[in-house]
Image 1 (cartoon, rainbow, N blue to C red):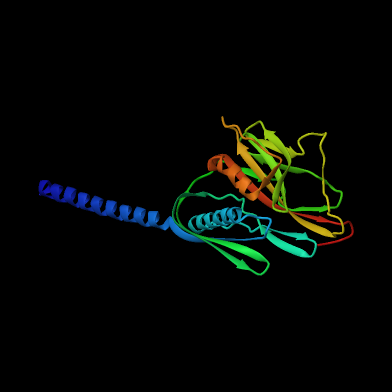
Image 2 (image 1 turned 90 degrees about the vertical axis):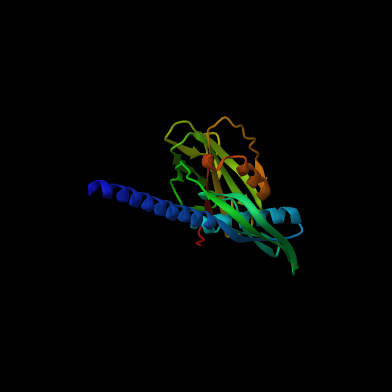
Length: 266
């Protein structure tokens, strides 16, 4: 009797195995299908920005939104109000980090519309998004930056990897390199300014009681690549810099910096 049951048991095992493989294949298929998503990116621009650059930024925003839809992450929105004479422009930073990347763009539609006082480029993409695990643990010791005009600014943090730390201040659509440092040990700490000969001072534009700036800190892990670091980047140039660094080899942290005239409060 046991000999007769054995083939039935084996057949049952194979049947269950086939069923298991079919279910697993179905789950993998569903997971793979879920990585394909549609997202929109918009960017308003004026005469100082070319249509090509504006649409490049809009596409970057669309890619970021596609990644966020798949990974389920929540990234803070960083905005800067830039004023020239009586005209103010709200700028959105597009340099950020996530645990995903765009594997391919399946479809892309670009439209430019003119409105009163500005133009707008809208990019709609259908993209295949991949997910990654970033082994870099990079952080700043403080997440709040409030300064009075004339205060000395010190930025400290740590990383579990050796590499280069670059701090940028984003203002008027430009990333200005304010300082850099090397982390030579794993794990290791850093402090900016990195030299006692340098000082970072909180500056407030003339006739302003307070200012809201954006601090972007970029970490690049040591490898054999050589990067040509400039003192100024527009948004497209910064995107291009990040695209030269593998996602697993970098971390980006954004924080608002508030600068107030002494005696004034936000």
